Length: 419
Image (tube, rainbow, N blue to C red; front, side, top):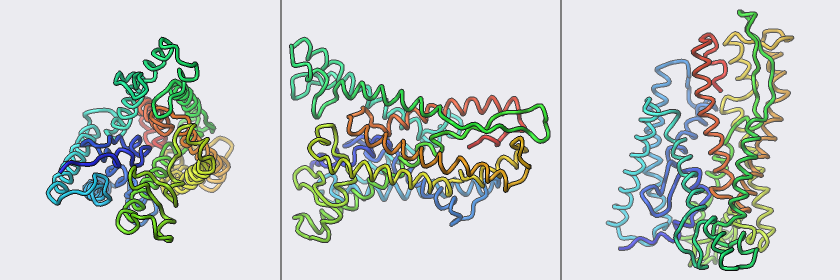
């Protein structure tokens, strides 16, 4: 039978951006299973639920093996979940098995490509490359797509802008097109990228020196976006999970939206598959400015939820991700570094770092939460998370290359600034 991809195309689009997923294709899952598996393993290791010593080669090898096995399991689970939740409509058993096999094999190929990059056939990680490539493609197609749209103009915002001028359309129509990429979205995208680049450079710098090399002095930067893009990924992964479970419950036991208790989790339009109420309704963006104007309460609640959860995940990841003041103090001391004016012991160094790290983490979580939500309202190409991820990943590539140069020049500092 034919596969209905209408609902699939509308299913948590913001998650598709950060997971390099494309609806209705072999890349339906994108890198979602790999990222999810990695985050879960890191959470377990960071919270000491599983023993892991990063300095032990055997532990590192075991950690890598467990991550791969867990990635396989997540690929199988998410492939099955997309079929069970009705993302492709009602399928025969044979069709379901074929689609499951296609999704699983595609996920396996992506995992192998990521492995090749990490083994030295590229720079950084394959996951980062997939994310940047997906975001770049979205921005390019939103700007330059030549395919005609229903309003008689091209889908690409730049072509549509000039076509609107030549046709003599009202000035507002040159810049704003509901349901399609427009110049407001393009200009906002440029502004968001510029803002993210600026924020990425904001930091507090603590002076440091080496206890054994008196001539060496430097600065330890504590970035405003200290925990990077992890809170955004966790937040929208949570939203995607809420949507998947809600749609599964709705399709199986509440398709008529008649169960009051289940309606609290989510109700959906039977034709379009869009959420119409419940928890899932408020964890889904109302869309563009038009949606915000039509549903201001939903937009406000969505904004508050995104910001609150981003801040919460920022503080959580601070501890379980090994980025807290205690961990950073241990890293500095173990590498022979110290802060001038402070005794070279753990307690005063932890107290000093605690003046900055928790506050910066909360502010950073608030900023990325606001950026992510507001960018969805303003129709930013690739979304605000996409801009944040793209800039932060490219910045990490830059830092990686600089770090390699520092390690070559100063081998005794290797590991001091690895985080």
